[in-house]
Amino acid sequence: MGRTDDRDSPTKIIDTVLELLESDGYEAVQLREVARRARVSLTTVYKLYPTRDDLILAAVERWMAANAYAPLPEPTADECLRDGLLRLLRSVFEPWERHPRMLKAFYLARSSVRGARRLDKQGFDAILPAAGVLLADLDSDYVADVGLVLTNMTYALIGRFADDSLEITEVLPALERIVYRLTANNEHLAAPPHRRPGSPQTLVLRPSFVSPYDPDSGTAGGAATL
Image 1 (tube, helix red, strand yellow):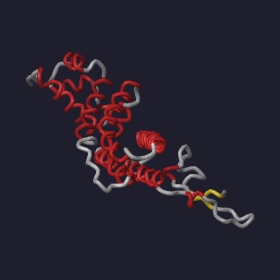
Image 2 (cartoon, rainbow, N blue to C red):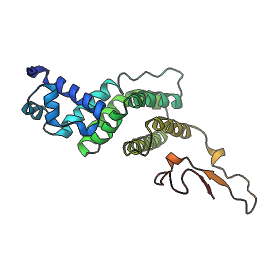
Image 3 (cartoon, rainbow, N blue to C red):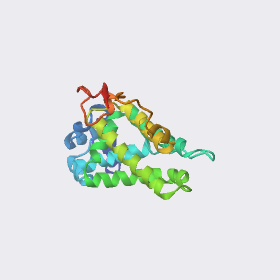
Image 4 (cartoon, rainbow, N blue to C red):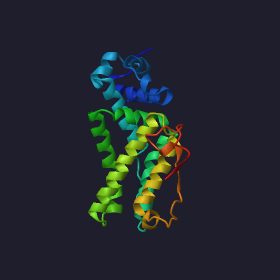
């Protein structure tokens, strides 16, 4: 079989990496196999992408640009913060729900300092302009706190999925509940109810959201007495 024209090599190489990531997963991406499938020399792969991490990172960036970040819907004039945040989260996560191996690839590609910087910058550059319209007239401390909670919870839930302790379909609903709590008045829920002396209260825990407890352990998934 003939070799690919050098001008087409970057596109063919990244296409091949994405095919491997989606069909066989992160570990299937090996430079020799990529070169063979893309019909380019191994030297060409190394020239364009000096390391396997560089290669996978470039592929993940292209996939994110084409799927999770393109194009993010514009907010409507009467859209509230909660609806706007939910809209943005769904735009990013629904492609991942359809392609869960790409979410794991994103997590692993982001595990290095360089990967985190590049993927975080790509995400912020894509999302902040759309989110800025929603946040422009709000209290700056509140905005900072919402961003802190959502960012850290997003990466924590992605990590739970990547280590197979959370289903892909559980990530977005969890983030939706977090957004609701961040934007709702929770004072009536946080206030302690009237209790009779000596009367225990039962707390029902969701098995998949009681990290770091094992869902199969005695407390997780059942009821704990306070």
